Image (tube, rainbow, N blue to C red):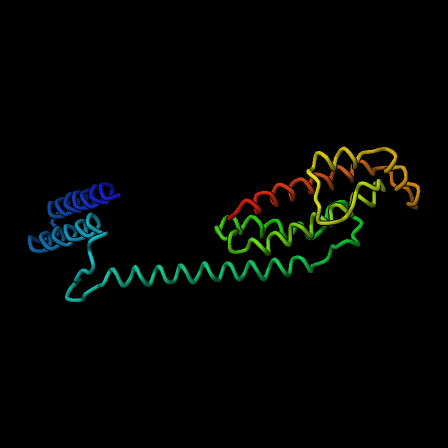
Length: 220
């Protein structure tokens, strides 16, 4: 990092000197202006090159305390991160209450459409650890909803809506059992002709949620 800053500072000085010479040759700079320009960029180059050690610089008599500016910037970033966490916490709660639920007839809980972008933002903002409890609650509620969706299309007694979530491959072996599907069809009117396609969609969403649950539980 230090070597990179030193090179960057040197390049700034070289570029500024070249520009100053060019302007001097065109008559755009006087000798005094040329000197002031080069000296100013020499100082800037040194500040860049020795940035970790520089505490303050003086520009036209005004002292700029770099350490204080850095501290304020870090404070602002920390405040922004906290605001992001609280914002996501509120939005996750609202997304769970929005429509959908166990009464939905669709294979995939409609709430998933609004919650998945929030899941992705929690990862992008690097705040999954702080929101682990809230994220896991959302995932478990949606997993239970997907189990219910499958249960309405396959009445096999092994499909139980609870917080004991089977791995997707185990659930799939049960969900496509013909006997359970026939039992579900027998109590539906009118009888749909695409139960297996709906089960497949429900399982795909269940698998995504299950993988995310495992990912969250691994966070320490």
